[in-house]
Image 1 (cartoon, rainbow, N blue to C red):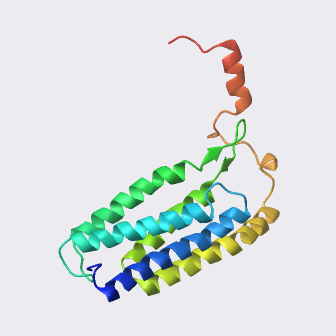
Image 2: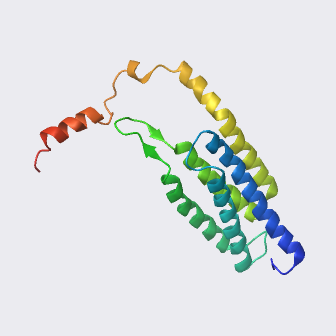
Image 3: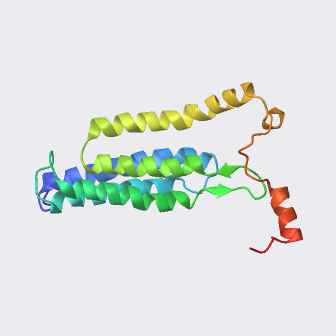
Length: 181
């Protein structure tokens, strides 16, 4: 890909543009649910992943259908790095056994993958993956609510031997002091 060639410049803009659009659309769901990573974050993640995927194809030997090791190293790097961004939105509710932000973290991860797919010019795969991700975000909340409606409340279940000590037990230990080793 040589950016001086007009056709190749259009291809670059198309890849980056579609990646940005797909990431931004996924971000709409996160914004509608007042989550920290919305349209701008997911659009940037997707566009950035597309750009780094494209540059790995440009600088590494091979053609676009078999770009070589560089693309695989890029994919590994993006997926490892994006984990830190996703981890930043995962929070544990204080004093509760609840975790928030997992769907947003997963959205960030999928958005990076969509960006890489667009960057590599795999349009059919990008559209299929986007459609499934969008459907999961739209329909998944309804499915979860139906499942939770049918499931017994956690307090009605018998205690498990493998449960983690609750906040009250930890608070008691803090008040009485931990035994010395």
